[in-house]
Image 1: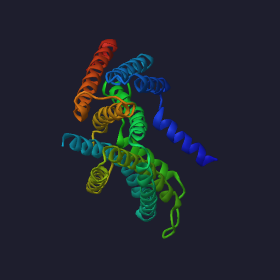
Image 2: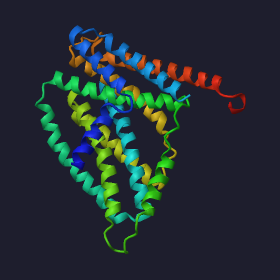
Image 3: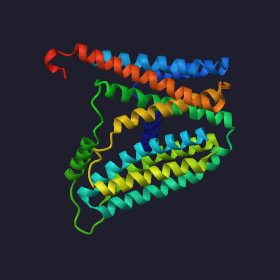
Image 4: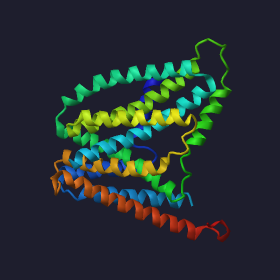
Length: 62
Length: 251
């Protein structure tokens, strides 16, 4: 049971990390790109997610 | 040609970062508790890793390339963006710098506080800590090498880059025989974060059916764009932190 927990925890940290909103945003961006095939969408979405996440973290840590 | 160089450089630096972390743990435990059990743990982890590589490589080749690119791209994107995010926060002073010296001291103190074993007896603590550290970091190197190599059809090149990085870090570790304070880990993570995220965008997009303008060269444009955004963000945050800091705390 401990091994399963460690395994799940490893992948959670690997994929989601400490900001689940970024992981959720990436999932949405990849899904929309899959449907639209728009090349500019993913780089723009990643940049916006990065800026939003970093600014939010910096505000909360003062 | 340029995509091969980028593949080599990205795999090399990403693997080097993981190897530095594993080496810090091994050095800390080995210095304090002795080398025999520690190096046995390293060897056992290497055997398990080799078995995983043997099992994972052929299995990945059976998956359709676009599906593989999409899954790998998504994973790299999530992983790389975490690195980049933390590197920006550290570079702008909102998070403490990741200090390999402090990590070394923590591991050394933890190892020292465990009960000592009689001379000549096998030390399971050293074995387990070294095994766990090398296996976890080694799995990440394996993941990077196998996925980068498989998606580009250059598994040999990616494996060479990963092996070169591991050999170089081990050589540096043996030469300095102490905490790896001289390796500017945050700068390395910043660069690797940009590269991993860029490859994640490129492969994730290709897997999702995107036709990149400029074909393979698009990845260079993505690297440049992300680097600019990250540097601008770091600069802005640094300025804001300095503006908010009390006058006496500046500089």
